[in-house]
Image: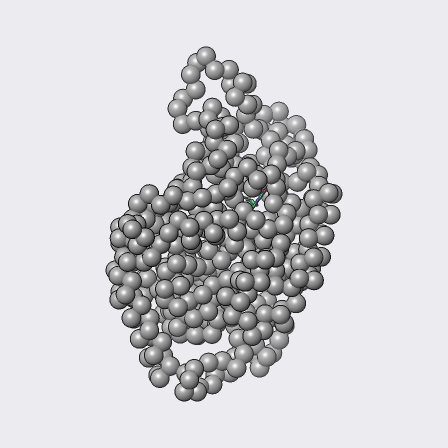
Length: 393
Ligand SMILES: Cc1cc2nc3c(=O)[nH]c(=O)nc-3n(C[C@H](O)[C@H](O)[C@H](O)COP(=O)(O)O)c2cc1C
C-alpha cells in the first residue's frame, strides 16, 4: 500500500492517490472530513485556518460507499486559490503582465524553513517555489490518506488516538490516561482546545500560547499516539527495514517541524536499570500473553507485542515569527529581519492530528503487506486468526 501527494500551499488543490487498499472497505467523505476539521483546529492556529475549510472529494476508487480495490484518489481544493491564480498559475506569464503586478519574488529565506537550502537545491531564486511545497499545508492530504487507513484499522478492531502531552514545558498529568481506552481519550480531547486530556494543564497551555503570540514568538511541544488492538507479531525482527518501530519513527519524523521520537518511557530508559525498563510477561486464558507494564510502548524486536503501541513525537516551535529573526537577502546579500505575512504561533494540537494519521497509515500499511489483503473480509479473518493463534501459542 502506498500513496503520493501533490499540491502547492496556494495552488488550486491538494491531491493524493492511494494504491493497494483492500476492496469492500466502507469509506465516505464525511469520515475523512471529520479528521480534516480536527487538523484545522486547536488553540494557536493563525489566519490561514480561518480562510480554508478543508473538505475532501473522493474522485476515484470508491463506489456506493465502498472501496473497489482500484486506486483511491482524494482531492482537497484550496478555497484561497481564487486570490492566487496569477501568482501560482501553471501557464507561462503572458508578456503583457508586469511581474511586479503579480507580487515581487521572495528573496528573503526564513530561518528554520526549507527556503534557503531548497532554493539552492532546485535552483529557485524566487523562494516561493520552495515554500509553497515545503509548507505544512501538505499535511492536509496526509491526514486524508491516514483517515482512509484509520477506516481500515477500525474494521480490523484497531483503534488509534493522538493527544498533546506537553506544550512549552507544561505537561499533562499522565495518570489521567490510566484505565482509559483510545476511544475514551478521543472523547475527552475532541472537546479540549489543546487536544489534551488534562483540563488544568490545557488551560495553562492556552495561556502560554496566547502570551507567546502576543510576544510575537512561537512554541513547540510533545504529542503522543496510542494504538490499541494490534495483534502481536506485526512487523519483524529479521531485517532492518521490516522493523515496525523504525517505520513508525520515520513516519513521525516526516511531519514538518518534528525533531525527535520515543516509544513508551523513551529516553528515560537511558537513566534506569534494566529491571525498571523491561516488561515482565504473564499469561491468562482470557487475554493470552500480556505484559505487567508497558514501558517499551508495545514493541519488542521490531514487532508489536499485543500491548498498546505508545509513540511520542517532539515538535519544535514554529519557525515563522512575528518577532523577526536575522537572515540574508539572496539578491543583495544584505542582512534583514525576516518578517511575516501570517503564521501559527503554536501548531502542536494540529500536529497531534497529523501524527495520529501518519502512524495510522504506517500500521495499516504493514498489516496489508503482512497478510493477504485483496478483500477486506479475508483480511479481517486473518487478523482474527492471528489474535487467536498468538493467544494460545
Ligand atoms: C500542522 C502544522 C502546522 C504548521 N504551521 C506552520 C506555520 O503556520 N508557520 C510556520 O512557519 N511553520 C509551520 N509549521 C512548521 C513548518 O512547516 C516546518 O517547520 C518547516 O516546513 C521546516 O521543516 P522542518 O522544521 O521539519 O525542518 C507547521 C507544521 C505543522 C505540522
